[in-house]
Image (cartoon, rainbow over all chains, first blue to last red):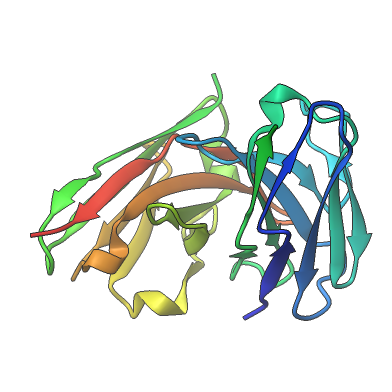
Length: 108
Length: 119
């Protein structure tokens, strides 16, 4: 199975900060990388697909980049509603999908 | 409204069985691959099983050891997960999700249904 490793596991940032979360695959997954946000007690929400494509209705302060094994999710200017846990997911080995372990984001 | 609504979760004893359902509405259900993802309390997301739009191609996570069966009824716009020989390790919120091909992302999720395996 393809392993997905996120860093950091948690972070705390202030409103207006630029936040970066990274995701590394255990082998090349080309651009088959998706990002989700999950708020406590809620279902995950798709933010970015195909490494850098913004899902419809998602704020443009979210962006994604990367290919191969290394990927990044960036929040350009952190807002209070951006708290939660962020997960990456690879679709390269469809349908044996795997997720990263998550990055918990706290707003200071 | 485009949505997925899970049901069927609850408390079950170790060794027991449970059948989850996922009702789809607002889109052409049969055109989409569907998947189940679970999340144990305080843990991350784990892919469970996947079924093609016609129900002809099915996959499971290796960790399930043949205990779960995914199915769908396109006439009823419904997805199912039959879970047998349940253990405490299966305690989780179970989500159904719609899969979008090409980059295999999950663009629509249900709210989840909690399965608790305990005596």
